[in-house]
Length: 266
Image (tube, rainbow, N blue to C red; front, side, top):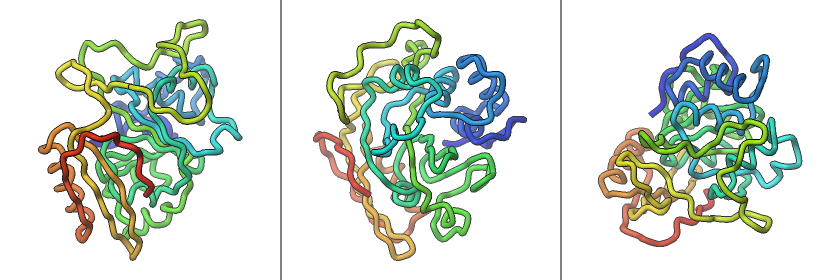
């Protein structure tokens, strides 16, 4: 669930943090300034956003990177980016906001597209007000505000989960000389190492969910497919109920499946 963006800071990075964590934007900007020794926050990279969200109890559990991400500057500090995303399951995919959001993916996401951050959670989007609104609103392609940004290219999209109380913070603060959580995976290219995500009871659950929701979304005559996984049938059914409210006419199939949740092309 996204929060209404509040606070004095107006940039898109702190606004995305505010929407996800429910803190004022000026507190989000203050966390970035402290963690990265910055005098002001006029632009934010994903490493800064992830480190700040960790301060407010949110950790990344899955990422999507554009195949040509590293051809441009992609982080405030490359060592911090490597430390935060080392061992995190990810895919390299080139896609637009519409391709990604039309099937209503599950979870809470911070999305970098066209040098702008937008927050998304379970069918709702919010940003600084440059593209949509500070108040969360449904992502719906028939909405002119959504349709006019649907072709924006995604640079990075990271899914965040709330850390369980008492759990050690998975994303370390990017202090110089700080030890990493562990060695980076050997070899080049995408990998899917085991990376547990926190759950409310304090235990660790695998990224693979037992129940698979296969979605087939139709909007403005365009079809898109995506798979989402959940730990229980109740979570899967609640997700389908929410999705059907925003995307009537789409098809959703719930099945029990213990296979590998490889990313599906949208």
